Image 1 (cartoon, rainbow, N blue to C red):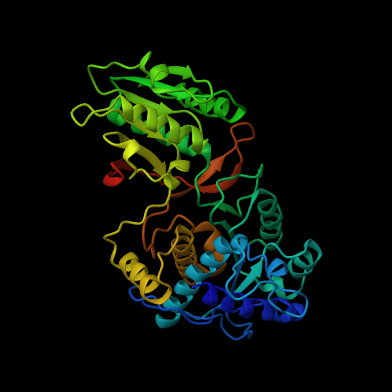
Image 2 (tube, rainbow, N blue to C red; image 1 turned 90 degrees about the vertical axis):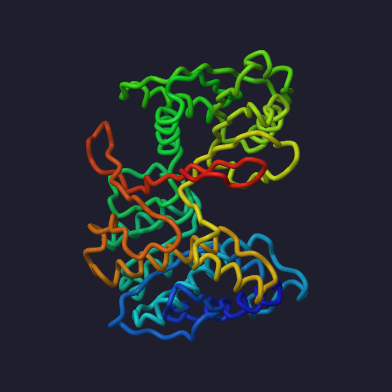
Length: 413
């Protein structure tokens, strides 16, 4: 698999070190989403009659290759910092393959968002880039600001595929967040608790911190707008707390409903471990966590008998036929499992490429269209600034709540 990744990076760097006009790996032609196939970056070509999509992803090509295009590492070594970006691009290639098989004609260009700033600015300010119809990015907060500004200037949408940050952006209807913000998660969690545990006492375990205060404020702000108030009790824990500390607030005669008021993954992992010590199969404690918990391995024995629930805007059901074929393809081809980034790249490019083809220059007013979804669902809604009453940006408000017991998914709400 490392050799394959290196091969793909090599193909991408050949396009990157070429003149600006050729710094593209076009997406020409894509497919039946039922049978993904491995595709290498396509030959560079341009066609002004085709709508154009620009994909920005962190490939770190300058770190992996020298100016002559020579790989800086040996063939057994792969630069870890390039993994997420390349996996997102692999998902994009699956989408391109699918679109091609369906006869959808588009031109897709992939850019390394980690290229030198001067080089990136040269691309963004070029005449060629002005023909772009849609920008999709796997980017951080600083990069979001730059691409959102470019999208506004070109009057085209910028789809932030992975970061939950609004990056302080206001009054920019061209900016779209797919990975729901913390404020949206807190609102969704409060509503979930209203629906399922409105009559029960809920203990909110948190630690000291600015981010933890933000979470509490989000809950408090939403509480002011709703008729059904939850019975929340906030408990601030010291670092390295133990089960004995938690027992002061737990009822040993029944299942306790707990909420983690922190995004800190280490805090969440420790909270679950300590709550599991007071949990039994007959009266399991329930803990509702944050979206960062998606990366915790709850199959481990220290989480036994604990019901874990967390929110996520992305959920790929193992029973999904297309997902199964992607898993099988990676197993047979790369001897590994596809990461979450592969599925995000696949679905994002496939869905929005179809919307671009369907609505053309009107895609910005049709972002809520739910056609052409592959694994889950987006619920893209406008976010209104409460002070100015103007539209700041669009955001995916769809949240899934995944319940796991002993590491096994029992329910998805």
